[in-house]
Image 1 (tube, one colour):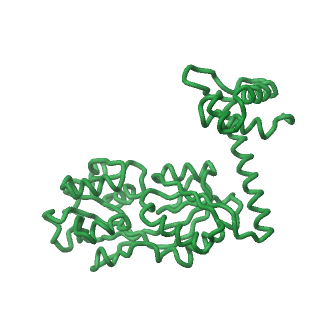
Image 2 (cartoon, helix red, strand yellow):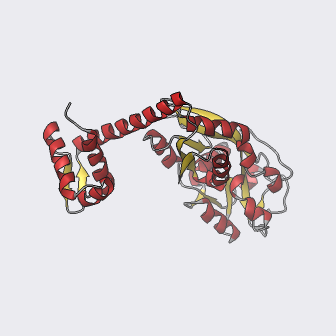
Image 3 (cartoon, rainbow, N blue to C red):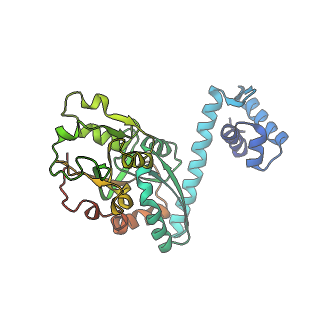
Length: 315
């Protein structure tokens, strides 16, 4: 194994990501025969085939997946080394890969723009996904930091709160409950809900909210894949929704949606900046974390504009 080169490991990673040698060769800026030679030499060194050649492309074998994992780990360690050298030099430049859950996409661009104004030499890359996808990116070292509502429990992380995350129930302005006050939980539970996919942070919070109502969590409502789809469906009168107040600022301000006055709501959670506990902290990560702690909350939509008679539950 001592003769394995970084170029060979990068070849494996490119083939896995691109599916075919010809596609991998374009990414690596090599000829297809050169990529084939790199792969053949590595397979000879290891003594096992790393890919099954199929009509659909190259599929990694068990050995191929192990080599891929090693290649990713080495690339991440090299990136950490670069960050460590920059930290020693006191460099205020660099790059930051930021992952955000889909609900955070409504304020993350404003955060990024303000941060990059203060730190113009730091390049930022944004990844948006649901909660499960964002956690997977943390696990795979594909992002340096993530913004989410609840830190994951199955990966070692450092998490710091930087602002409130209120959750509310919304309806169309002509809904029968739109003008009702102090709606009991038992009454709102009888309504037809439009909900996010299983595993999303908002859905988990709704399950907790209804957990003391027998049988209600077993059939929460109609599942939809995005907050935008849910908002459009609520405006069309297809049901009501439990949603982050940070996603509805424009629609409530324009009168297209209303926030229902439900007893025990809004539920106030927190927004967290999350990074892996085993990740070396780069100067860019330190700068962004400090920015969030000082200014992050100022870029969150104000709940008071949406729900003047705010009540807060910490359940």
